[in-house]
Image (cartoon, rainbow, N blue to C red; front, top):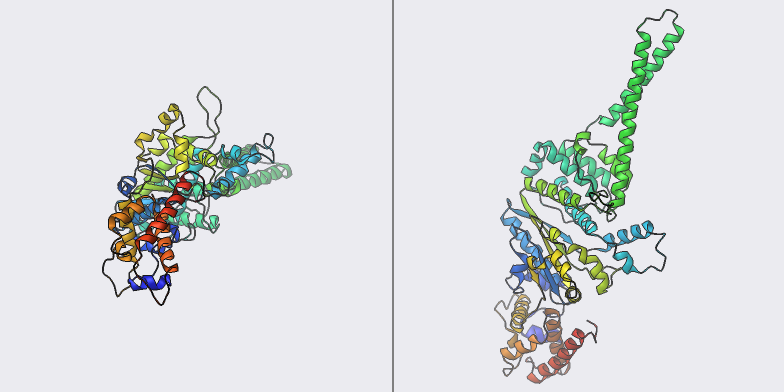
Length: 527
């Protein structure tokens, strides 16, 4: 018998249990507005208008990506319902570009100590918290610039909706706030289309900070004119026999002015070039050349760049130099929050997922540990108005429990709303399967349908709950039910179609799938 005919008999127009990945599951997309979710979801989400951190550990298929998608949907609903208390969503789930840049930079920086056979573990050990902070700031700022410019080219179609009233009010912001946004853009805007210069000039125009005669151009022009004047006066004094007494002092004054103006111009260029070089060496996770950064910063006044917490290598008082200045990132996040507050955003929600998927990690627990552990820092996780949602593989939970007391004291995971293991009961999985069945009902059968409707009367609700409880998580529960239906259709002929699955088939597949799940947890079988 055909599985489609079996489902159609029950008024179901597509297989509810065929998908294995939430990102590619149209049925789950339709269920995002429903109330069916993991029992711990409310704790993981928290209050959207008061973002807070949550650390979640879950096995493959336990629903981490589904939770990420549900959080995204809840934030979109909240922002639509409360335009004066919105939250900026930052999805940090593609670590490949960040890790690739960091590893290439570290390999070049340490080439005298590293060889071509250096293991990826040693390079990944050099990933710092600052690299993650730079990547998160880049995603947030790029999204913000897209919203201000009213485009989706920079962040790949994920721009912030910006009301016209806010776009008009930007021009009236205090100069300091507009300068903060300009500096954040110069450092962190990373559009996917690569049009950095075009976006920069468009932003300056929107902020009313651009000028036809920048300060550096005026210095250069004034230095050139005074130098020409000094040369003309010197030639005049040489050819005129009875030169006036004031010609010589005026020549010297013009010469001195020319030297001062040209020296100021050169010093500004040199100092800014040195600053950009330091920033580039420190911000290794981003793709910004010193030339690009220098040309952008030259468009701003000197006062706009004064007292900035530049991300350059810092110094420990009375100690040695350290490879990064974490405090600068925290200050930039504070300034970003101030800009967002002017746009009626109360905070930032950062979703960190798929840390096992980058090509340099390939699911290796020790490599994941090198990348994730720098983020388990209490100061980073407990920032005001910033909620970090870490959705981590279960392998990291095992490694976490082996850490020392000093590590736990620094991470303070007792304050991070930690879900030690994302577990599902049989009853919760039963409700989830029922919701998927109803989502697949055709238009002619809008009534509710229960999972028991697919089975013989001697298959009770409790029996199904017990069988699903042995599957532990949604992906394996869906695989189990899919295998049950396929086995029933395989052993039933079309001319003697039976539209109720017998208990014997359920028990046989339950034993097979339960054994597979046990072997998976013991590491004896692939996921």
